[in-house]
Figure 1: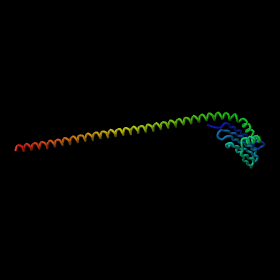
Figure 2: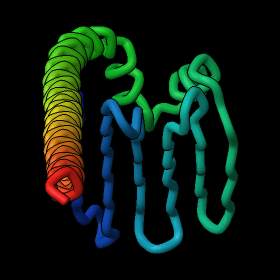
Figure 3: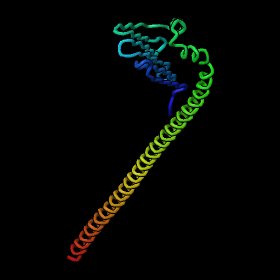
Figure 4: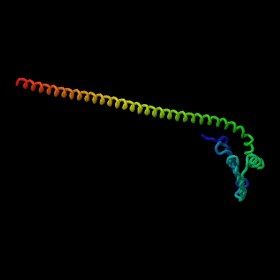
Length: 205
């Protein structure tokens, strides 16, 4: 999208008395580069004059050429307006500067629209970023919850397994103790029976 608010160009060329006359005038005013204008007056090869003005921030660089002489200056806007009024060749620039506020209003409206568009784009970008961040945070939370759930499940499984093992060990120990008691009781009963049989034999004799 072009940011130029005003553009003006005019060129005239003619031969008068066998001598070539050239006249050029140009104005460009815009948002990014600001105001610039140029005028060229040439009669033949020797009579030559040109003025080039370029805006740089709040200041204006002015280059004036007359024949072989070159003059460079830095001017503020009030000084530039005085310089323009003092040169007859810059009458077209003086006319534009007197009407510049009209084009400035149009430009302000355009700038408001562009600023609205930029703000909309920025809001869209910020909303997208917030959505992405929310998605990332939700993913992270879900991962954390899954990890916690898996940890809890593993803990429960380990607890159950340990309980089962302890139960099995208790049962096996009870079984072993019962078996040992039975064996001991059998041994005791065998001994007692042997003793009684010996006593019977002695009493018979």
